[in-house]
Image (cartoon, rainbow, N blue to C red; front, side, top):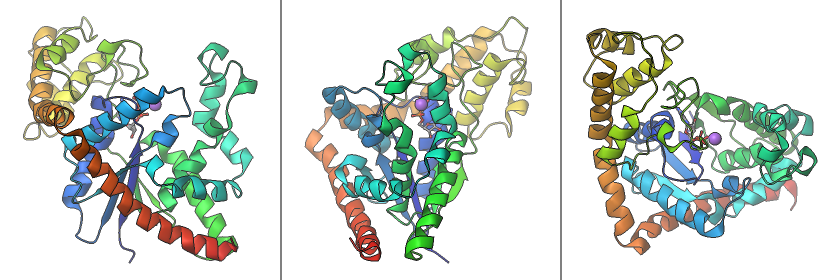
Length: 344
Ligand code: ADP
Ligand code: NA
């Protein structure tokens, strides 16, 4: 039985929204709470992934710090897990190169995320003015993701469904490497997040996303009580009377029911039951209830975040620095075995 090692990453692209929180970060905190004493948990702020789109250096620095404060604010404890910035552990880039020598262009070209970039109008392409100008880093970033995971002999990778294909690619790279050089790399398991997608408040048939230009489409984990209420008050619902749960027919209303259900730990067993309990509410009252329940749950996160961002910044950053030293020691030990096996 392998010792459990969990790795997951998040890009430093602004303060997380409720989708990021419910779909990823809250699961990370739960893994931390449930971890056996010999489990290693690594959570990385993946800034090398973030530069596949245009980033201003000052923003990137600021966003890295905001993400660090967010991770600590939601409850990750640097004494129990390794929280670090990807760019501060050079071995990620080194292993990426080695793995890229065994990565098939055909396989990478079939990745859904890459193909979706090819569907974009030229004006919306990242760092490129035409398809021909698309950058290698964007094409090969699943290889960097594989390096992130394989460096730590990761056994479990908690991710959203959209990442399952990249994880399968990681497994294939590890198997291919082991076939050539011996059984050095651990082939990781994908741990799909059970949380349903949190939908946009403005357009509830689309997922809540930071890339949505409408700021009212998403709630950030640092939003004030007033902001939460105002965003939810303008959430798109429908003109059917009363509350019922149907993600297809009533996406807006169901999204609000889901939010209440996610945050109301002691309440109804399922969103369907919750909707039944709430069926007499007007849309306005449902929105108020959703706002109250979101606000109540994320208030401690917001307060902790403000404390961290207004407190001693050296101390905040020192959490990531000590995380980086721990991660680097693990990564370097893997790299030494890899370099030896390959004769480099
Ligand atoms: P975004 O879509 O805002 O750019 P990312 O792609 O950076 O978010 O996702 C970071 C993490 O948050 C991933 O694990 C992803 O699965 C999760 N996530 C993002 N948006 C949602 C959502 N609307 N519902 C559930 N999980 C989400
Ligand atoms: Na995204």
